[in-house]
Amino acid sequence: MLNVLDGGLQTTVQDAGRFGWYHIGMPPAGAMDQLSFRVGNRLVGNADGAAALEITFAGPVVETTEEAVVAVTGAGLDVRVNGTRVPRWVAHRLRPGDQVACGQAERGVRAYLCVAGGIAIPPLLGSRSTYLLARFGGVEGRRLQAGDRLPVGPVPPQAEALIGRMIPSRFLPALPRDVELRIIMGLCSYRLTADSAGEFLAATWEVSTEADRVGYRLRGPALRFRDREPPFGAGSDASNVVDVGYPVGSVQVPGGQEAILLMRDAVTGGGYATIGTVIHCDLDRLAQAPPGSKVTFRSVDVDEAMRARREYRARIAAIAESLSLFDRVGLFGP
Amino acid sequence: MATRYDYGGDEFIFVDFDIEMSLEVNFRVLSVCQEIERQRIDGVIEVCPANASYLVHYDPEAVEPRRLVELLREIEHKAEHIESLSSRLVDIPVLYDDPWTKECAKRFADRHQDPSVSNLEYLMAINGYSSKDEFIAAHSGTPYWVSMIGFVPGTAWGFQMVARERAIQAPKYVRPRTDTPERAVSHGGVFLAIYPVRGPGGYQLLGMTPVPIYDPTATLVDLRERYILALPGDRWKLRPIDMDEFLAIRAAVEAGTYRYRTVAQQFEPARYFRDPPGYLKRLQIEAAGC
Image 1 (cartoon, each protein chain N blue to C red):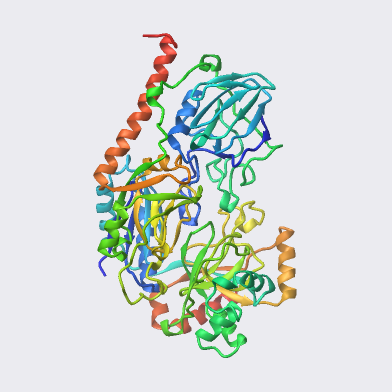
Image 2: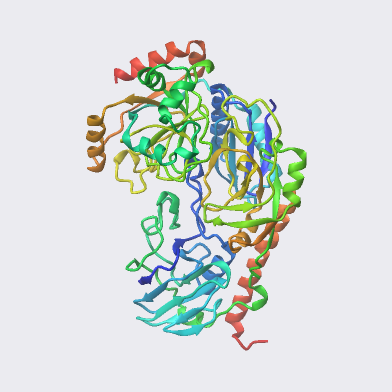
């Protein structure tokens, strides 16, 4: 059991996500930076999809009632066990009564506290992820607060051997403030004027303070839509279309005034023209970009998107390989 | 227009049948989506029908994107027009002109086209009705076809089954509200929508239903499996109620004993298009006999 002594700013239970329910309006939710989350699980010997705590900006304080193995990955923040600073991206042993306190993110936005055995709250529709907007999953569909008690799954048999495992620094995500996102343009982009489509790709956008698990509002140039007689059912504004499904990662420009990029708690559909979709693996990096970060878009086709996917998977495989090497030869190996 | 296939990033495919809304195109969407589900294509995670388009969520490691588009095109050409589909008639009690949504509209009056009147009075005027009763009779008289589900869990887009020239139309708020009460009954564009949870919104507020359309705690027996009320192809019939009935239904919902009034029927598009009001009337009589 993990007892929550302080919930931090917005700490939620998240896993790989809830899939197959987009058609009822239920977005996947799940860890916003999947790479950091997966690597954290690997460090503590879990399967990729085990539930962990997603920390946003300022971390929680938790106490374990049992022996446990934990690792913190993702955003750069101070992690202390019983007041002593410990490194991130390393598996640590906890004794009953030990407290883990996570500080404020100095780089990046979201960190993952992974525990061997995973957070074992009951899954809903196949996932333990918290979807805050509709109060679904996780712990009562909300952020954690002091007094919450989180069951932990059975600790893997060779838990002793996990202690001290670490990720070599060359594999750690760089967490740059400014990010370039690869996007496949399309969907309802036919509504934009030719000039505005080019302007969207040429502009530097800024992450606003309205950036959360649902979507990131980006400030940039005003875009213009083609003149038209509104089709029946679309609505009178030039940015309106007859309501469509919104892919996770899609970008819309309500009224042409600001761009909204939908993240893993996306609203699943609506009546604003979508103009393209950021490829899946690049959402990890946006999830670590705080307000004020600069964002640019680079147009790619589906073949380049597939190459990017392969590189992303190869990177996770290489990290897993470095862990198994560590298990064979230890910290002071070749 | 020709069907348009497009990549929504590397995990979604967007298929757009038309830029205009009509029941004809929505039936086409449903028929193609049913056929995709029947084919159980490896790598397809799910199909999400929308008003005049659909999304496929897929795993590109299991099915190559270009190959999937080919398969979807083949299905589109093969899919038959639907002869008959399951469609429930669902009773939605509504307290029109209720105090809560009127209070909400007042709070956000600065974002509205005409803050001097209520949202209901505004829609009444711009749609050419001379009294509230007349407007409510039109708004609730004919069922709404659930043509799309989404936004947040349980939100259903309802398209009233009337001739195009009789469709009630509503502009969205000039700037969206940051708050809307849960279960608010609203209208935007040509669509009815009920808010499943409290949150932002831009549709015009007309009333309040006492029945939840989304229940994350799965307390009510009818919402236990899917957490939401709406199914694609539902026909939602709004029924004006008074405050006493509203409070009585609320009490039953809170006690966990409320049962939705739904009747499962078969709906035949061809018969509908031959005589829309006549066919709807016949289905309603049939439902009343159940």
